[in-house]
Length: 101
Image 1 (cartoon, rainbow, N blue to C red):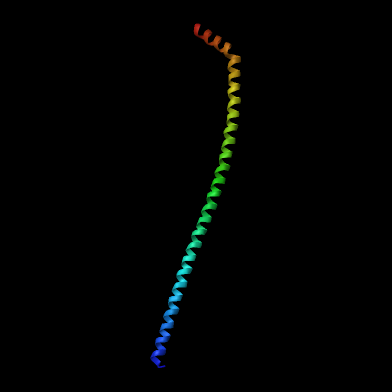
Image 2: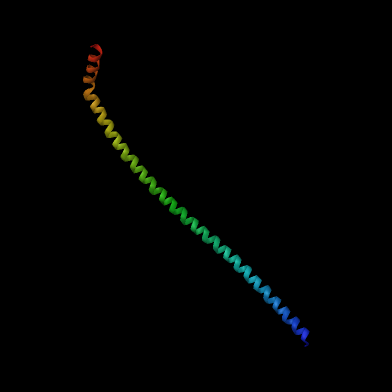
């Protein structure tokens, strides 16, 4: 074997190693992209679940507050109606008296 054949053999083996290296890098890159997409999907799903939970919690608080305000409004309305019914005749008489004077 002469020197030129040895050099060509080394060059051939070097190219084969480079090709294999590029193939491994491409596979790793593809695998990394798949893992990244899976990670992004998991994070997105987790965030959506947290948002839904927070939304439900806030809606529960809102519903409770609306119910409390409804009860309060009902009590105040009842108090006003009671006062109106108790004083209606007196107020009408007072208005009529002032009008006729």
